[in-house]
Image (cartoon, rainbow, N blue to C red):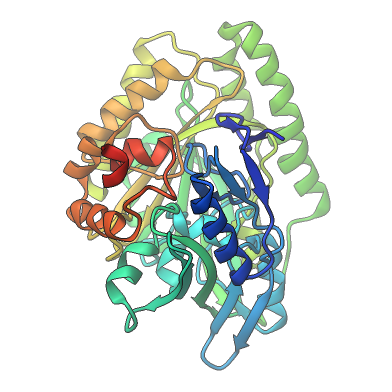
Length: 438
């Protein structure tokens, strides 16, 4: 049976599909794959745009690795099976009075998939989801099971929190959760130039700040979140507003307009201006998981780069100049978010507070020229690509961007010299495993 990711950018027909329910079954599947001389990879929910999860050999499906092993409400430590999706985990945590410290704007990913690619939200004081990890259980290439944390196999822990499956199959994750909290969300349009001129103040004044900007317009859509206690009186978004904005305008209506724009590209600038005006201002308060995540049904291609904070505004202005002087029909917005630095070897935020610029294109429209321009500009600004988003870089380019790149590759070569967990994407971004080079 063939498999493809959500965006339709990657497809594969695995030699074998296995759905393990326990760590022991994962270990057995890895040992059997090695005996059959087949590579093996665990997929997530398919929300990576790259080939990180492609499994041409043995594809491990995480659907049955979905349990909660322990919850300590006092310490906030929660141990879960790696295959549970975030949208299922969040209500479980809430029933225990807990929540994840931060989430991204999509909650369909598995926990292991989210941390393995460095999934993040937005907030200058908050790191990626991987920074919430306090312990991991992995099955290594020889089928052995190991645990790692800051005190147990710390080198493996430092590397494995963002490792896109290169070091082993993650089977359990211990997360540091926080007391359940609410968010007040204020969504409003603002002139793009005002946002760019005042972006540092906007980031500093809000617990979480992000903004969207559709090329061909001069208006940005800002999102400001303030954290509130979990027992705050909630004022959730009305069902009518959610239906009109999140389903009719940004999903059903947007899809219909983009299909027309695919056929008649000259319509695209007008479409982006219409959508920018059609999305209403909103002010509501709800539990954090209900605010962070949004519904995304219109399929698109996406790339994303982490750039130094002081490089953001010049890079965006350069990209705007390019759009204004070329006839490229760019149908999807930039999304700009902010992430605190961390110490994870291959995290795009390694030792650097970052502004994160995501660029998109509707999946039916050509994206190559536009993505090349974005990568040129953001790469020249010192950007590092998100491991789960589309990019053109290889191992030699990654080595220049990550101070601990060679340390990571050396650890991968030690743990998996034969490339049991390799696939074409990993071979490109890390280089082949040593025994596979022969």
